[in-house]
Amino acid sequence: MSKMRKRSFLALVIALIFALAACTGGGSNGGNDNKGGNDPQPANNNNNNETPSNTEIIELSFWTLGNVNYEELAQEYMAENPHIKITVQNTGDQTAHHNNLTTALSANSGAPDIFQLEIGFMERFIGAQDKFHNLNDLGAQNVKDLYLDWKWAQASSPDGSFQIGLPTDIGPTVAYYRIDLFEEAGLPTDPEEVTAMIDTWDKFTAVAKEYSDKMGKPFVDSRDLIYNAVRDQSDGEIYYSKEDGSFIGDQNPQVRKAYDLTVKGIQEGWVSSHGLWSTEWTQGMNDGHHAVVLGPAWMLGNIKSGGPDTSGLWRIAQLPEGSGNWGGSFLVLPKEGKHPEEAYKFIEWMVGKEGQIKSFQTKGLMPSIPSVYDEPEFADFTDEFLGGQKSAVEFGKAATRVAPVYYGPLHDQTDAYIKEALQNVQEKGADPEAEWNAALDKILRLIERSQ
Image (spheres, rainbow, N blue to C red):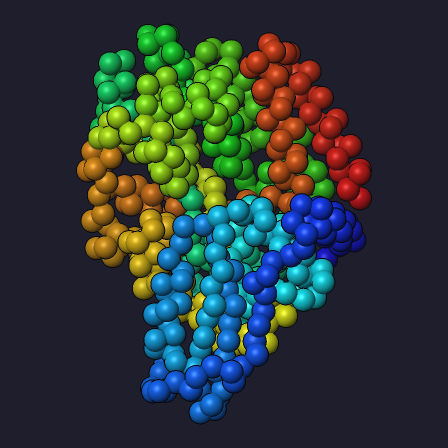
């Protein structure tokens, strides 16, 4: 770990400890509790794993996040492996979830055997290699080829020698659109025709302007999502160099392209002024305020909840010039765990092909194993909200169009300054170039403070 990353991680740990002490009074109460030997003897030890002894029960603690089926999978695994006892602790608060792990790691006490790490928090932990088991030492290289290359790379050190986690789900980005509004505007509605119509960003912006000029309302839902869609198609890096961590956002042509294209949409009136996640943004799904949402696979749930009266009116097309990814998780093994081999066997089983199919079928989690996309349970899946379209197939297409990108530990703060500039352009009529330069100044000061 570089000095800068060490300092950043330690500073973050200290800050979180104080924040958690102030807000919650301490860390999680669901930490590692591998006492062993206190549970009833399994009646039948006919299982797939080798049992260390006839009397020893291996206890594993597992912290999960969000609406997942991992407790059900753990139950299935325990039924097949009676000497394994897995205790699952689930939360929907992803910030608290990751802060609790940070607190446990800093105290060297209380971390679980298995932790579900969301990709948005990866940069906080991947540099702390002394705190996690290297899954390459436990056999991860043997299953690497099962997974999407870009997904695997998100949890790897730059040279690939350290693997912090096994991939679970992903969030490939697509273009959701309203067929009733497209038809009213005289645009094609068939997904293949729409994909062809917007297969470059130049074509997309031309269609967006044509739609807004004719309909008198925005084409896309928000400045944040169109900026993200273009930004995430960067060539390997966005704001920071993967090689040395230096700031490159001011020289990355894709970042500038994303900024300029969003400004163009704001000035031409085809980007909605509603803030992402605002009440107005949500209502816009239902009332036809906007026709297009550029979002990940999981965004479909937000569209469904925000637009209950629009069932059957939405479809999925592919993004111009590639795709991007937003969201998804990994399973990691904190070093505090005393049974890494047993924990690894479980997670390798859980996020294998059969496990990912079950997670897709029960919770809609998008698989990170591309061979799943050919399975009938996936390929034949249709969604009536999307007019019976084979939505899983479209998400699978998007997943194979994602290119890996490096984020860096200051990505989120850096991105927030760029988004603030775009907000000022849209809401205050500020000069785009002045806002761009002001954002760069703030980013450079952020970097200086972090060193």
